[in-house]
Length: 327
Ligand SMILES: [Zn+2]
Image 1 (cartoon, rainbow, N blue to C red):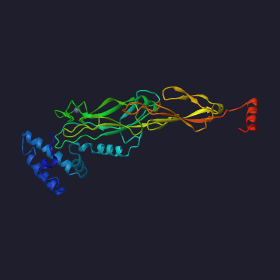
Image 2: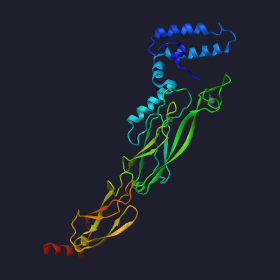
Image 3: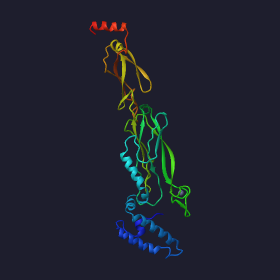
Image 4: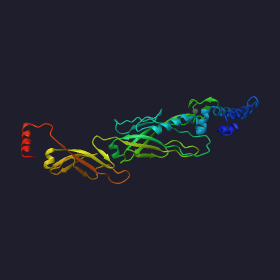
């Protein structure tokens, strides 16, 4: 069992470098194998003293130890993750992480978002602390937001090596399972359901899949932060959708029917005579599903008067007649 380095040397946490050096010399002399021939306990103690001194005599290692305790060797990775999480924009890749999101559905929609987290157990800890949440950006289409979707996260979790119990060695020899690292990387798939009705900024929380806690504290959560990609046809306002619908000039003047695409199919819209461009028709219940509620928003069809692309001589003559008639 790892022991607190300060108590191993018998100094306070505020000890100066000089006090640490002098405490080390004293302890090293006392437990030195030459002074205690054949004493296994003294030999182990001598090792502990040296390990403690190696960390506490190096100001950078000591800073990490003060901050992260037994996790001090992972301080760089922990700090890098914290920086990356703080600064990572949607869709960006933060740091040297290995965390993949691959689309289950559309082949054309592969996201490559990288991240990494650590999963380490063991070691005595005095304070229980819940693991940090991990935020992971994810992009989906409007159609996926409409129907609900899933994402498979490829997690690369570092876990204590089960062969050597995390020590990196077996009976003094380097552990072959982890090459002495004490940890192994376990790739793992995690399927996350994204419910229908999510919008940009929606968060999908998966409890227990964040960073591991310390000292018996539970794991944090994995939080997917959703971005819904802009749609070429539909503009979204809350649960409502807005789209431009082309209406031929003759239909706009005389009235008639036009086809209106919806997210899932199409409907026919009755256009009354003398419909002006920009007029909005509300199609109730054809918008987006309401997140964790019943029902749907509305679809607003905005009229865009469509002129013919070319006209022939006969049509031109008719338009001239209209002009002469004062239309
Ligand atoms: Zn091992």
